[in-house]
Image (cartoon, rainbow, N blue to C red; front, side, top):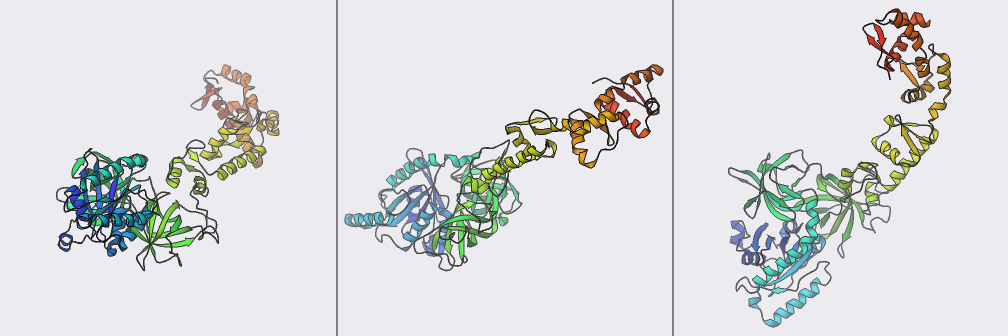
Length: 564
């Protein structure tokens, strides 16, 4: 369900219009009602004639509360731009429109208020003025709707238009429910007998009773005790909707507007991102300081540094740093404000949530390849957090930038050209890659190119066959080949003493003689004497006979084994 946020100049009737549509007083504080001035976010809802429910956030129009207006408008799907037919477009009308254009809701509806106080000619005149104002806006706007909160004129038509717009944008928002949950908090309060309650617009994912979440930027975990929508409990709520959540595990004093509640381990929590900045006409970035960035209900003071070489700033590429990490994904949009003047200067779209390259070498073009290239091989889960998109694995559960894939395969082929590769010494990714590479044979724990294992051609094979049961030591340079021959079943070993398996099998006639002399088996000493070797070879030999199941140890004697 799409969320609607009002916008417009102070005293142009935004709250009165919400009140007329919903029957709900959006000014929650006594001071607001006494002064007739909205100073904080208000909320209302109403069901249209076709059953479509409108979720409305009312924002203050005064220039001093622009950051509150931004918090209300951010993540709204539809902007309701309110313009007084008597006064026409004013300063905050244009300022709020700049915010809307930067945030880019999916659609916009225009309402002219207090039309009961103007003539038909004035209505036409202000409609023309609005058309000119919105001509360059990237938002798709409705025709201005004439309304009066006093007489009720146009209120039903406005509700129906908003309902139709909600239905049109809902299809575009369907994919947001498939993303991990993220809720920017805009209100926190405590309810007697229930505890901490937060409200906000669920911008992605879904929330169910019993879910476990974390407060971004902390290690604080919270549980969802209950979920409410428009004052009614529900088991489940999906984006994009206004919601109230009763949390356990956290005090109301530990949370505030701008905090973010997210699904644990599903987001990149970062305090540095590469962004593409679109400045409003006439705006400039001086030394990269003195700006703040707004997303959802969160605000951060930031620094901006050009990236991508000497012309990076001209292309709008910057590295943004801020205190206190936020859970972000590529394509998230920050509204940029000049802290000195307080005016909106542009919008920054996140291209890379985890930049690794030095600023001079960064190229934050937003492509999957660029977002992954400096991270090596990553799991699909990591890749999707880094890119904000569904990513197909290259091998197993892993993927990487094309250059990383090509380099990994080239390195493996170079190693294979020199010798076999022991798969036990490989990373999980390397083992997966070897299984996909053309011409590579994997058997007995090693990968090679070609049908014949190079280890079988080693001089070590003939040497140990010739030495029989009195083998000499294996040189350090031959240890890997010897270990490989053991895995191939050519050699057996114990305590770094190696024997050829054919030599071991050739001992069976001698063993039969020993068993004939004593059916209860023979000792290592008796084996030593029968073969004419020292204990240095007899003990390892006895253990190798056990490995091949020719013998079986029974106490200090060897009896017949179970065979291969």
